Structure formats: structure tokens, C-alpha cells
Image (cartoon, rainbow, N blue to C red; front, side, top):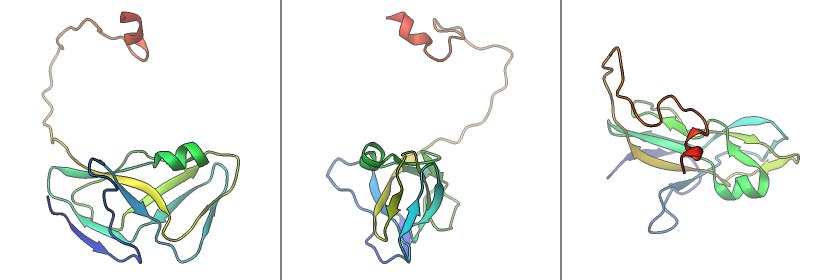
Length: 145
């Protein structure tokens, strides 16, 4: 699949790091280093603008290495970029650690997955088909082993 992209950053286009990778790294596109203090959140620009086809979205997700080593994650994970959005892709990072975290220009800050999605039409009804789970909520399936 080909996706149109404008790259106004100083960095290469996102790419798959391995043959079977689902996500591509996004790079910080900033003029000077930023400090993300504990529990602070900032919108980090990437310099990328996409034209996704109808029926697709770009999902912005945390990088596992940043999360486990530094407590840095994407606040609205996964962030959704809709097919009709034409603005710059920004990544909302939050620091969940107790230490300051420095973000430098060109740092890999998140990953992006392109995914197909469905557009639905609601069918209102008075009842739903019964299942064995029924109305069991959070944690309810662990008792069915």
C-alpha cells in the first residue's frame, strides 16, 4: 500500500525496523532539547503530514523501551490519526517516572501502526443475544477457567 506523506522534518521517513514489524518509529522534530518533568505531558511534533486512504487510521503507540526503561509513554495510547486529518502528526508524551527525561531532536519517541478499520451503522434493538458471560465485567472471565 502506498501512503502519501510530506516530511518537513530533518529526519528520515518512519520505516519498519524488521521484516515483520507492525510499527514504524516516529522521531521528535524539535529545534532544541526538551525536558519532560515527572508527571508532565507535552505535545512533540514529528514534521510528518499524511494522506491516509478511507478505511484506514494511523495509530500512535508507546515504544516499549522508553516505557520500561524511562517511564515515558504516549498519553492517549493509542492515539488515532483519522484519514481526513491533514495536520502535522504530534505525539503526546507523558513522564510517569520520578526523574526528568530529556527529549532531543531525532529521538525515537513513539511508533506508528497503519490499520484498517470498519465504519459501522447502528442497528437499534430492544434486546441482545444472550451469552455465557452475560453482563460480567472487568475480571469476570478469569473465574471461568
